[in-house]
Image (cartoon, rainbow, N blue to C red; front, side):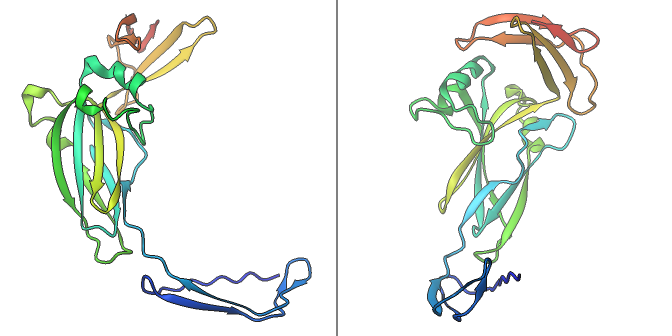
Length: 231
């Protein structure tokens, strides 16, 4: 039993003539009865942009770079909004909730209603040909502290990439040093554990709120020395 595969590099939109001689043996003692021939047109390489990492958390004390992948384009436009803390409940009811591929259900209610537009920049790529792939890093740290009045050191940000030749991609990025582990009891109560992203150690005196869809705080508590609170 033999399997043959071939990889060839041809220009975009060119044509390839493929011919397979009759009598070729296949698995199960089957044979090709007639010679097969066809012409295949090579498709253009797709132009694309995307986030090179699936992560959605940027640590306050670690690397704040967002890696971006681009193919066949010379630049990528990057825009960032910061959600207002009091409007975070609207994200739950008005969006798909997917942090990696985020979008609002209705175009009439979007980031313009719940966030503040803080940045637009254009990133240059190193793509020399239509098939080449390049990676570029956007350093978030250069922008988190440069507007003191807006207190951008942490929070939930919407990051959007687009280009005139590609589909728009959007993800949510949470800039924080706190992460939670939640254990829900059979009765509906929750044990919440808060720890540092950078050190992995528990965080004491951290306030934890359980917020309803309408924005009301249903329950609240502060973590103890073990980073634990009960809601």
